[in-house]
Amino acid sequence: MSRRSPPQKTIDDTAFPIRIKFAVPPGGLGRIMLDIHAWCESELAIGDYATHGATTIGGSAFAYYFRDIETAHAFVRRFPMLDLPDGTLAPSYTSPMLDLTALEAQDVCNLYSMTASQAAIRELADAMTDRTGNLQRLPAIFPNAVAPVVCNGFDGRDLVMMRWGMPSPAFALKNRSADRGVTNVRNTRSSHWRRWLGPEHRCVVPFTSFSEYDSLSDGKKEPVWFALGEDRPLAFFAGIWTSWTSVRKVRDGETTDDLFGFLTTEANGDVAKVHPKAMPVILTTAEEIGVWMQAPVEEALKLQRPLGDSRLQIVARGRMSDDAP
Image (cartoon, rainbow, N blue to C red; front, side, top):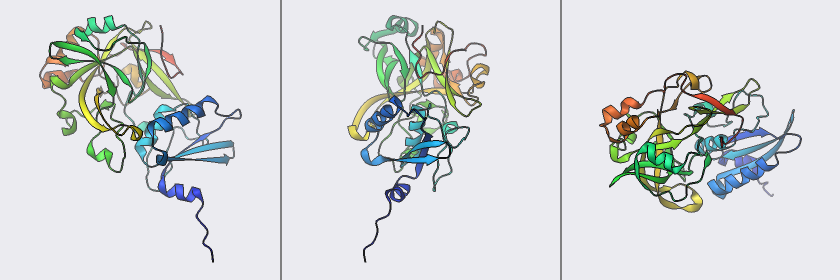
């Protein structure tokens, strides 16, 4: 008597407990599907995900299956334009093992732009040394991307390139094959973060706009870009950095990288209309930058506060980059 093998979907249900299902429009997904395949090949190992097609009452659907919630979070952050077929108000994860929600569980600001000139960065941040080479405009900076950062060097402040995403706490790495990093730091009382709060590990991160997702009445998520003005004046996030050896991508193996993240705080009135939970810590003057870069920890952390109301304005909607003006 022969034994029938279980269907592949049953195998995948067990091996990949976190599932994200999204609708396929009548014309197909087109370029988006190519981008998804490219992202999976770049960020994941072959055995870290599975895919399945499906038919729903409203039409066709497609599902990606992942081994852990962190990978699913990264997928949703990267492809927020995907529509869900089940009519839920926000992306959600189906799992027989976990009761977890999606984007609302995330902190703030996982997409920003930096289109100011190197000269402007050096002047406002008082950077004496520039190691960034020919810095291009960066209209869309995603987690794990390399971006400009100003840190304290041996002979003053240095403008350098670092990778976005600080080392994750040990508990977050359980059963994970790679550490994609933590982009935002809120709890500065945590022992994990306290080690990097001294001036030698503080930095400022130049930006011209940053994005949060707005929940629309039809359940879709729309990127909303905030800046200090329509002309996107330069400002900085208050950040921390470290040099760290880890596996960022399974395909690359262990690497040593200079990593950064930036602090978050309560949302001000401008951001709270879109994202009520938090906003980045923003520095707008040379004096504030100097305090963050040099002052004792207790004084520096006083800057972990919301920017004043009416200081930010919405400058763009519905797009995944901000290259204006």
